[in-house]
Image 1 (cartoon, rainbow, N blue to C red):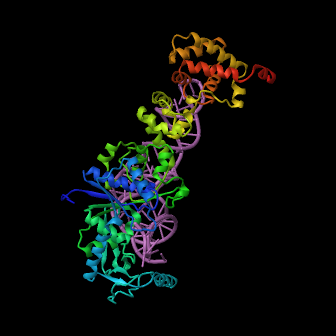
Image 2: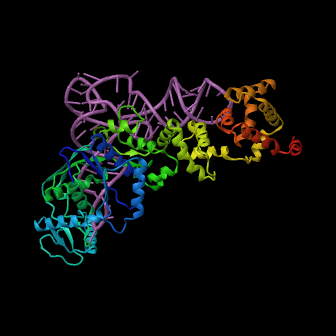
Image 3: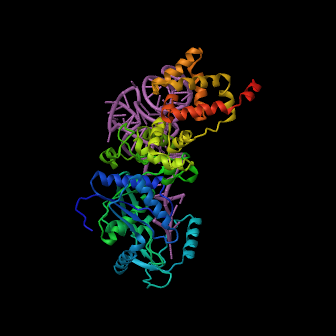
Amino acid sequence: MTTSENQVRTRFAPSPTGYLHIGGARTALFNWLYARHFGGKFILRIEDTDQERSTDESTRAIFESMEWLGLNWDEGPYHQAERKHLYQEAVRKLLEEGKAYRCICTPEELEMKRKKALAEGRKPKYDGTCRDRNLDWRPGSVVRFRSPDAGLTTVNDLIKGPVHFNNEELDDLIIERADGYPTYNFAVVVDDAQMGITHVIRGDDHLNNTPRQILLYKALGYEVPAFAHVPMILGADKTRLSKRHGATSVLAYQEMGYLPEALVNYLVRLGWSYGDQEIFSMDELIRYFSLDSVGKSAAVFNPEKLLWLNQHYIKEGDTDRLARLLIPFLEARNVKSPDLGFVKKVVEDLKSRSRTLVEMADSALFYFQEEIDHDPELAEKYFNREGREYIAAFLEKLATLSDYTKEGIEQALRGISEDRATKLKYVIQPIRVALTGKTVSPGIDQVMLTLGREQVQKRLLGALKHIRPAAQEQRR
RNA sequence: GGUCCCAUCGUCUAGCGGUUAGGACAUCGGCCUCUCACGCCGAGAACCUGGGUUCAAAUCCCGGUGGGAUCACCA
């Protein structure tokens, strides 16, 4: 692997134990932006050393999520499970140099000691039982790092500033487990060093791990990278974001009809800002992104603002693209192979009145229904004597309307309202219900244009037939 | 509990010693209008607390309080 001297190299290193969540996505985004800003490399690494909990399904979901968000990687994906020999090699080196030792304390013993220490108000720190026993390998043994018991380790964090830790707070952590796999803190260090990572950007839940890792870098003779710990994302109750705060998986947002650029724009502004600007294109983000303007405090995830951004991007979005994105949502609602050209017209009608593609699909359904299934209550209210008369009058005008345009249609409708000396809306609402089955829809002229004259006539006729005159009179 | 981090409207944030403390979402009015939206105009709404430093503190320092993270053969 060739690494030019000043090249920025960042990475995203999720563990495949679940879907990519909102917090992970933002971490990935920050790393990606930082690399892109400096023309560096962004690397993807799957941390699957925990054989128990890692799944291929999660790995696939992570790839899919990142692709959807547009976070392409330049190297990888690397899988830690396939790099086992590298960690073992590093462990061997530390062992030889006396910087690590084997330990045969059982998990049960350790657990007991921990509990006891806690109960007596002491620190639950490894007591060093095996530290100087110079043990050889045996089944069930692990390898521990010999951590210095005095001195100070400082993390010069790019976001938090310098953070100091007393080495005596750090204990002899396990670096190789009984199954031969490395533990997280060790694998991360070996990988980040060997992959030439220059900037480790991650959640600040890792800040406390960093001094141990720095000690490991030094013990292994590696150069220590720069660290940047970004604040966490919390739920509305200020606790760590989790399922009970609503959807947290990136793909769930795709399914809920969000646009990737909306999610990206939302996530980047959680903790980062650029003056008063709220809307950013990817190009702008790459140009403006900087760790200097990442805040220090945790942010509460606010679905309302995400919704607003999504609505914004739908409103401003390219119609052709939106139509293509909408089609799967329509098909999921039993619209059979919709015509792209027609869907594009529908999208135009609905663009400024949908916050998600799900909302758009829901309100688009009537366009595709040959027969409107009228709600009895609405029918009774709007297809009364006046309503039916307006519909009939409009139908009559429509037959001879030479100007089937927005203006022509509006003129015809106004004509009817003026002739009967009634408000325009009293003419329009029955027609709206007849055409859409609802009282809420895009502008009626627009609906008619999109539907086409023939379809409009058919639906109006259908509405007139809907309630039998006899039944209607009976009610009156 | 130990260690570490954090603290400006309900929420995201701007502010980097001197501002009527700005913007955005949300909320509430109004306009537009064929319904619903969009759009436009407007309103209410914040510097956790106590000490310092300074002519001057949201901004710098210390204490307190509050919130969060972390203390595994998880990552």
